[in-house]
Length: 436
Image 1 (tube, rainbow, N blue to C red):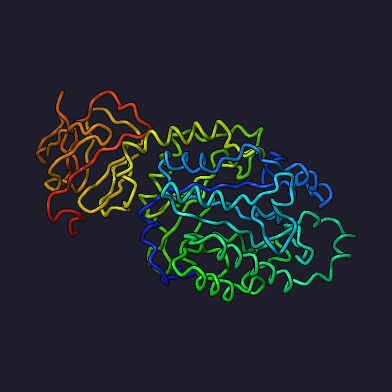
Image 2: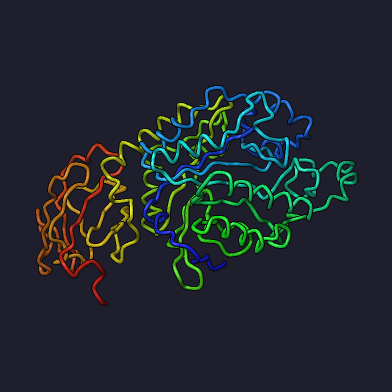
């Protein structure tokens, strides 16, 4: 594990907590996962029809930005180039780009403008890998890794020439679109078991690349996939069990998650997570000091598919009345009850109930520390009491909970929201855990 950089002020990142990832490219026409070229061992010639027919005539970046904002997201990260090497912008270093397809226009510039117009932060994803470039060496992930004749014919490929190209394209992206807040490189795989031909910091010339990035965009956040320290960690497709730390020091992180398990548009994949599950994943991330970057994969015509749009709409409904338990919040020193998560900002402690209890909920360590409690969605009061520690169980009387517990009296009916949240106003001087 490596130490993230502290070179820039990145307070906006932990304030935002929730972002939109967008995976979009030629693979959207195949509509069966963004790694389709590698998974199906497609040659450049077999992949070419997607380039020849790429014409996203319904692309509306303003609608994408509005959708993200209405879902409660505060930044958008777009794939400028994925592993297939296709570029969404008008790069001067290749013809393998959107401006050479039937669509014929730069796709990045209008999205950057739309994102800024909604007051959101701009992020770029850029693949370190390039299966189309003539100097990128064949390795364990390359689509033609099993083609012995192809491997023999391409054995003289020069990684240094490819890396020059990589640096030149990153320089373009960071000089032609104004201020860029966030950069997600993907990915290094040096020395991983079974991954022959793996590539890492020496191949990408990562220290040089990162220095250029910081010189061109001094305030930018850069992820941890250059095989050298970055500004935040990027667990993908899983939720960490605790706050992430390096050498005992908690660090910024972001859970990268999909709605249905695929990053690119995957027409026949119906394994969608429910909005309630995604809300719980967002809460779980914030409760452990992290962000959630939730992906959508637009179609080949440029639309965010209706299922994803409905999911984001449902998340947005929850966020409209619960966002103050997310934005600017982080872990709490207090220990939440089972099936619950705490987030905290100053003297506001937010209790998220993943499961609905009957009548009472006991909060360890909070006796005498809460001056008021209410449901967050409607600001209706939650009554509280401290049960006498000598009270014993009787026919209609519960036994005393653990010492120093505050008891909440809850309605029988669960509020009709994805995840109910109780806002606890801590009394002055009681925003942290009591000393043991």
